[in-house]
Image (cartoon, rainbow, N blue to C red; front, side, top):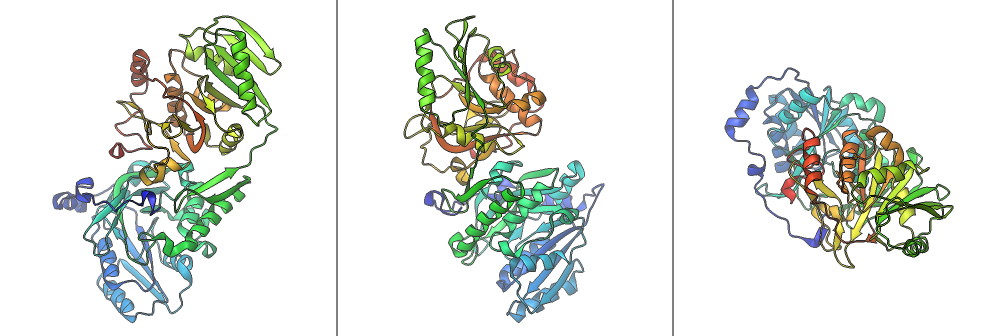
Length: 537
């Protein structure tokens, strides 16, 4: 992920972003939690720069939460000074558990040997040349006491080789299973219950180079509670031999990452192919959809004549390779008129002011699990649009799928919505379609809070959980409401970067509906969208 836009590394004020003054740190040191678990920080060491090693150890010893152990395994380093340096620290502080070997068995096996030293209820992973913020463990234990998560991860940044600069903060989304399948956004700082290892097993050496990605895929798949701390608690060292500096240095890591995803999909009996995506460190999964499955396409528009509907019907069929499609046209220009164009196409005349009710009626009249809702102004640009979106819906956790909607050949019309207690914001409106976005977000499949009502795929079964569209709404804001309900029921909305359609921006400015929406979801919506921190925009 290092060559996004080929941009310069940007300095930012880490201390403003994570304001831990000496007074705050002192209060944290004195604080007593109701539950103070032992946390094992595991570090595999191999030929580490001595200064980096000293800084790493000190960053752990300077934690404001003190019930930890630092488990260091030195696997095959040929610098004898490292052994004496670590032993010197271990002699002074009994929280350091140390073991060394003359044999370097690779990053995975060395990490496993470090884990074997751990006795904590929780394990935290730390690389031998990186640093923890002094409040890292304190913030984790605060979350443990409040939420009892299985896994915790934090935001991170990079530090220069001489530790003088903080660079490129990665402000991460809350748990996003589909974003994780596009790249390893979790990365550092990762803390997890040690008991999970009974289900996952340890690191696998056949994935060396991307062993952390493969391990995180397994780890998250057996976890019930995954918590994101939106603070930079980890500092990834930039040096000439690290992936943080130049991922080309570890080109084999890309192949290992691809292999990790292939293994993950195979274990879940999902037929798909994995390829490297648009930027270094990202991946694209092409799913195999079952074209024997029927889908329903609901088209919402205003047509004055039957001939106009027939023309639209034939145009869509011409631009669709999927043959098993049932069509429902909702005609706002011809209220209460109902007829069939053929055995696979129904037309309903509807009241334009009752958006939610006529969408619900169409869904109830559908007989398929997968239902598309499409505005009549949408232009289909690829004949495989249905195949692509059906394939992207295969995972059980997904309730809604939407593609990147282009405005024209150059600009994006919509690629997901930010929803907070103060606004519904079109994230990428008018952005050049070639722009990668923050950490490549404009180029990957990912989870978002909501999508444009203009074009989306819904699983009908999710409506048995969330309820149908709220019929108070008179505008497409009802779809945004449905997305919120999906999130509240622990299911996911997914956007994919495939440019399948063209449309102008949808108007989401219906005053009464917005007012009702905010009041209805007042207790759920926050200052920040959980998938897009406000600081990014």
